[in-house]
Image 1 (cartoon, rainbow, N blue to C red):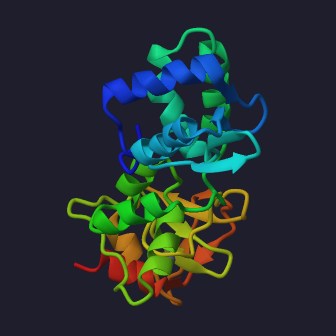
Image 2: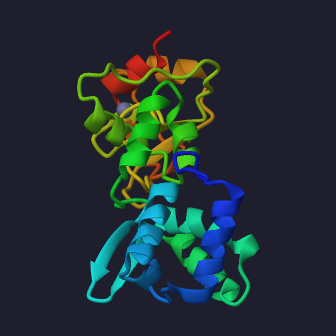
Image 3: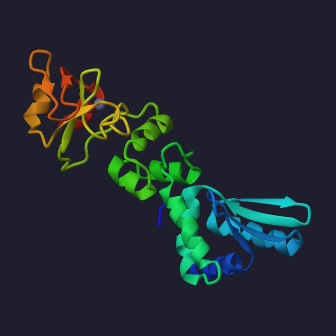
Length: 236
Ligand SMILES: [Zn+2]
Protein backbone atom coordinates (compact mmCIF):
# COMPACT_ATOMS: atom_id res chain seq x y z
CA UNK A 1 0.00 0.00 0.00
CA UNK A 2 1.04 3.63 0.29
CA UNK A 3 4.67 3.77 1.38
CA UNK A 4 4.21 6.74 3.66
CA UNK A 5 2.01 4.71 5.98
CA UNK A 6 3.53 2.24 8.38
CA UNK A 7 2.91 -1.41 7.67
CA UNK A 8 2.62 -3.09 11.07
CA UNK A 9 3.83 -6.62 11.73
CA UNK A 10 1.51 -9.30 10.40
CA UNK A 11 0.51 -10.31 13.92
CA UNK A 12 -0.59 -6.74 14.67
CA UNK A 13 -2.53 -6.60 11.39
CA UNK A 14 -4.25 -9.90 12.14
CA UNK A 15 -5.11 -8.76 15.67
CA UNK A 16 -6.58 -5.53 14.30
CA UNK A 17 -8.55 -7.49 11.71
CA UNK A 18 -9.89 -9.82 14.40
CA UNK A 19 -11.10 -6.98 16.59
CA UNK A 20 -12.53 -5.15 13.57
CA UNK A 21 -14.49 -8.27 12.73
CA UNK A 22 -15.73 -8.70 16.28
CA UNK A 23 -16.36 -5.20 17.62
CA UNK A 24 -15.38 -2.81 14.84
CA UNK A 25 -17.67 -0.30 13.20
CA UNK A 26 -17.17 0.23 9.49
CA UNK A 27 -19.16 3.16 8.15
CA UNK A 28 -21.42 2.46 5.19
CA UNK A 29 -21.37 6.04 3.96
CA UNK A 30 -18.29 8.19 4.08
CA UNK A 31 -15.12 6.57 5.31
CA UNK A 32 -14.68 5.79 8.95
CA UNK A 33 -13.41 2.75 10.76
CA UNK A 34 -13.70 2.56 14.53
CA UNK A 35 -12.73 0.04 17.16
CA UNK A 36 -14.49 0.65 20.46
CA UNK A 37 -13.41 -0.76 23.84
CA UNK A 38 -14.69 -0.24 27.39
CA UNK A 39 -12.99 2.76 29.00
CA UNK A 40 -11.06 0.58 31.44
CA UNK A 41 -7.28 0.88 31.74
CA UNK A 42 -7.00 -2.25 29.56
CA UNK A 43 -9.42 -0.91 26.95
CA UNK A 44 -7.66 2.45 26.84
CA UNK A 45 -4.34 0.68 26.50
CA UNK A 46 -5.69 -1.34 23.55
CA UNK A 47 -6.93 1.66 21.58
CA UNK A 48 -3.73 3.61 22.30
CA UNK A 49 -1.76 0.69 20.97
CA UNK A 50 -3.73 0.68 17.71
CA UNK A 51 -2.97 4.36 17.16
CA UNK A 52 0.65 3.72 18.07
CA UNK A 53 1.17 0.70 15.84
CA UNK A 54 -0.66 2.05 12.79
CA UNK A 55 0.39 5.70 13.23
CA UNK A 56 -2.96 6.81 11.83
CA UNK A 57 -6.31 7.67 13.39
CA UNK A 58 -7.25 9.24 16.69
CA UNK A 59 -8.26 7.91 20.09
CA UNK A 60 -10.95 9.38 22.29
CA UNK A 61 -12.86 8.49 25.43
CA UNK A 62 -16.55 9.15 25.89
CA UNK A 63 -18.23 8.04 29.10
CA UNK A 64 -17.80 4.32 29.46
CA UNK A 65 -16.21 3.83 26.08
CA UNK A 66 -12.97 4.63 24.39
CA UNK A 67 -12.32 4.30 20.69
CA UNK A 68 -9.73 4.43 17.95
CA UNK A 69 -11.08 6.00 14.76
CA UNK A 70 -9.54 6.28 11.30
CA UNK A 71 -11.20 8.74 8.95
CA UNK A 72 -8.74 9.86 6.27
CA UNK A 73 -9.73 7.96 3.11
CA UNK A 74 -6.16 7.00 2.20
CA UNK A 75 -5.58 5.74 5.74
CA UNK A 76 -8.85 3.77 5.67
CA UNK A 77 -7.83 2.29 2.34
CA UNK A 78 -4.43 1.32 3.73
CA UNK A 79 -5.84 -0.17 6.92
CA UNK A 80 -8.56 -2.20 5.23
CA UNK A 81 -6.30 -3.45 2.44
CA UNK A 82 -3.94 -4.92 5.00
CA UNK A 83 -6.68 -6.27 7.29
CA UNK A 84 -8.98 -7.77 4.65
CA UNK A 85 -7.10 -11.06 4.19
CA UNK A 86 -7.65 -11.77 7.89
CA UNK A 87 -11.28 -10.71 8.07
CA UNK A 88 -14.38 -12.88 8.04
CA UNK A 89 -17.76 -11.61 9.23
CA UNK A 90 -17.18 -8.01 8.23
CA UNK A 91 -15.09 -8.70 5.14
CA UNK A 92 -17.86 -7.75 2.73
CA UNK A 93 -18.49 -4.49 4.52
CA UNK A 94 -14.77 -3.76 4.65
CA UNK A 95 -14.46 -4.41 0.92
CA UNK A 96 -17.24 -1.93 0.20
CA UNK A 97 -15.77 0.65 2.56
CA UNK A 98 -12.39 0.29 0.90
CA UNK A 99 -13.92 0.79 -2.54
CA UNK A 100 -15.62 3.96 -1.32
CA UNK A 101 -12.36 5.23 0.12
CA UNK A 102 -10.54 4.48 -3.13
CA UNK A 103 -13.17 6.35 -5.10
CA UNK A 104 -12.56 9.53 -3.15
CA UNK A 105 -10.27 11.75 -5.16
CA UNK A 106 -7.29 13.01 -3.19
CA UNK A 107 -7.80 16.45 -4.63
CA UNK A 108 -8.70 18.74 -1.78
CA UNK A 109 -7.95 16.15 0.91
CA UNK A 110 -5.79 17.52 3.65
CA UNK A 111 -2.21 16.38 3.42
CA UNK A 112 -1.35 14.26 6.41
CA UNK A 113 1.94 14.83 8.27
CA UNK A 114 2.99 11.39 7.01
CA UNK A 115 2.46 12.38 3.40
CA UNK A 116 4.38 15.63 3.83
CA UNK A 117 7.22 13.81 5.54
CA UNK A 118 7.30 11.32 2.69
CA UNK A 119 7.42 14.07 0.08
CA UNK A 120 10.26 15.83 1.92
CA UNK A 121 12.22 12.58 2.14
CA UNK A 122 11.72 11.89 -1.57
CA UNK A 123 12.09 15.44 -2.79
CA UNK A 124 14.23 14.48 -5.79
CA UNK A 125 11.62 12.05 -7.13
CA UNK A 126 9.52 13.24 -10.04
CA UNK A 127 6.03 14.58 -9.45
CA UNK A 128 4.65 11.52 -11.25
CA UNK A 129 6.50 9.12 -8.93
CA UNK A 130 5.37 10.98 -5.81
CA UNK A 131 1.80 11.17 -7.07
CA UNK A 132 1.71 7.45 -7.70
CA UNK A 133 3.19 6.63 -4.31
CA UNK A 134 0.72 8.82 -2.45
CA UNK A 135 -2.34 8.07 -4.56
CA UNK A 136 -2.67 11.74 -5.45
CA UNK A 137 -2.91 13.52 -8.78
CA UNK A 138 0.31 14.65 -10.38
CA UNK A 139 -0.78 18.28 -10.34
CA UNK A 140 -1.15 18.31 -6.59
CA UNK A 141 2.55 17.65 -6.03
CA UNK A 142 4.13 20.93 -7.26
CA UNK A 143 1.58 22.87 -5.22
CA UNK A 144 2.55 21.01 -2.09
CA UNK A 145 6.25 21.36 -2.86
CA UNK A 146 5.84 25.11 -3.03
CA UNK A 147 3.89 25.17 0.24
CA UNK A 148 6.49 23.04 2.01
CA UNK A 149 9.58 24.75 0.61
CA UNK A 150 8.68 28.18 -0.74
CA UNK A 151 12.35 28.97 -1.36
CA UNK A 152 13.18 25.78 -3.20
CA UNK A 153 14.38 26.24 -6.73
CA UNK A 154 11.86 25.36 -9.42
CA UNK A 155 11.69 21.70 -10.26
CA UNK A 156 13.99 20.26 -12.93
CA UNK A 157 12.91 17.57 -15.33
CA UNK A 158 14.18 14.14 -14.31
CA UNK A 159 16.91 12.57 -16.41
CA UNK A 160 15.45 10.98 -19.53
CA UNK A 161 12.32 13.12 -19.34
CA UNK A 162 10.43 12.98 -22.63
CA UNK A 163 8.03 15.74 -23.51
CA UNK A 164 4.73 14.03 -24.24
CA UNK A 165 2.81 17.25 -24.67
CA UNK A 166 3.01 21.01 -24.57
CA UNK A 167 0.03 22.53 -22.82
CA UNK A 168 -1.35 25.90 -23.91
CA UNK A 169 -3.18 28.00 -21.37
CA UNK A 170 -5.95 30.48 -22.14
CA UNK A 171 -3.40 33.20 -21.29
CA UNK A 172 -1.24 32.10 -24.22
CA UNK A 173 1.54 30.43 -22.25
CA UNK A 174 3.15 27.15 -23.19
CA UNK A 175 3.60 24.78 -20.24
CA UNK A 176 5.12 21.38 -19.64
CA UNK A 177 3.17 18.85 -17.53
CA UNK A 178 4.69 18.77 -14.06
CA UNK A 179 6.93 21.76 -14.75
CA UNK A 180 5.10 24.37 -12.72
CA UNK A 181 2.14 25.07 -10.49
CA UNK A 182 0.02 26.70 -13.17
CA UNK A 183 -1.20 23.48 -14.67
CA UNK A 184 -4.87 22.78 -13.99
CA UNK A 185 -6.34 19.46 -13.02
CA UNK A 186 -8.50 19.05 -16.09
CA UNK A 187 -7.02 21.05 -18.99
CA UNK A 188 -9.83 20.08 -21.37
CA UNK A 189 -12.53 21.34 -19.01
CA UNK A 190 -10.55 24.52 -18.37
CA UNK A 191 -10.43 25.26 -22.09
CA UNK A 192 -6.74 24.56 -22.55
CA UNK A 193 -5.25 23.24 -25.76
CA UNK A 194 -2.19 21.05 -26.20
CA UNK A 195 0.25 19.64 -28.71
CA UNK A 196 0.76 15.91 -28.26
CA UNK A 197 4.27 14.46 -28.72
CA UNK A 198 5.88 17.66 -29.99
CA UNK A 199 9.44 17.68 -31.28
CA UNK A 200 11.60 19.64 -28.80
CA UNK A 201 12.12 22.44 -31.29
CA UNK A 202 8.40 23.29 -31.11
CA UNK A 203 8.99 24.21 -27.47
CA UNK A 204 12.16 26.21 -28.18
CA UNK A 205 10.56 28.09 -31.04
CA UNK A 206 7.54 29.38 -29.11
CA UNK A 207 7.57 33.17 -29.48
CA UNK A 208 5.35 36.12 -30.28
CA UNK A 209 6.57 35.92 -33.88
CA UNK A 210 5.91 32.20 -34.20
CA UNK A 211 3.11 31.28 -31.82
CA UNK A 212 2.51 27.56 -31.42
CA UNK A 213 -1.02 26.43 -32.13
CA UNK A 214 -2.74 23.67 -30.20
CA UNK A 215 -3.45 20.52 -32.20
CA UNK A 216 -5.66 18.89 -29.56
CA UNK A 217 -8.08 20.00 -26.87
CA UNK A 218 -9.08 23.59 -27.51
CA UNK A 219 -7.40 24.07 -30.89
CA UNK A 220 -8.09 27.80 -30.86
CA UNK A 221 -5.33 28.24 -28.26
CA UNK A 222 -1.98 29.56 -29.32
CA UNK A 223 1.12 30.09 -27.20
CA UNK A 224 3.37 33.06 -27.77
CA UNK A 225 5.35 32.75 -24.53
CA UNK A 226 6.98 29.94 -22.58
CA UNK A 227 6.17 29.66 -18.90
CA UNK A 228 9.40 30.67 -17.06
CA UNK A 229 9.09 27.86 -14.47
CA UNK A 230 8.59 25.30 -17.23
CA UNK A 231 11.57 26.74 -19.12
CA UNK A 232 13.75 26.17 -16.04
CA UNK A 233 12.23 22.70 -15.68
CA UNK A 234 13.31 21.77 -19.21
CA UNK A 235 16.60 23.69 -19.25
CA UNK A 236 19.59 21.42 -19.88
ZN1 LIG B 1 4.41 26.27 -16.66
